[in-house]
View 1 (cartoon, helix red, strand yellow):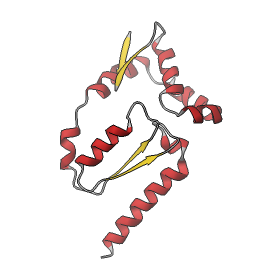
View 2 (cartoon, helix red, strand yellow):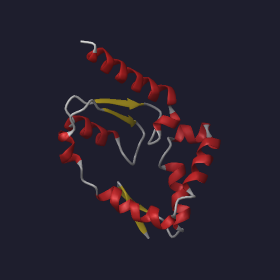
View 3 (cartoon, rainbow, N blue to C red):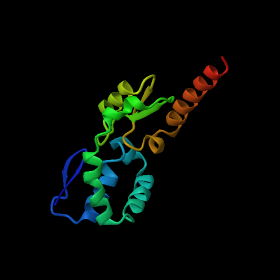
Length: 142
């Protein structure tokens, strides 16, 4: 069985449950976080394994095949795009493409983080949001 999430990945003869478990370890967190925070990664893995395997497998092509980049220019509100530098499923290049297509959008790339940067680097993630909101408040005061 082959599933695609951004790029083609194979279950390598394993069950979909084993594939989901492997994704939870490698696909969502950076190597450094997996090594330094195994309990958090294990908790995420347990949570992800509660996902219906058929539903997960069905969602993969939907995520892979969605084509929304051409519609991003219609966004007319302040937008903050946050990316983890080590994200392989939604790489920084994708976030850059989003930022370029949304007028006035800001992009923040968080180092030492993959897809779940809010879990890996909560202080940096929160600071990015705080700066963004402070800027919006400052603009509203004018």
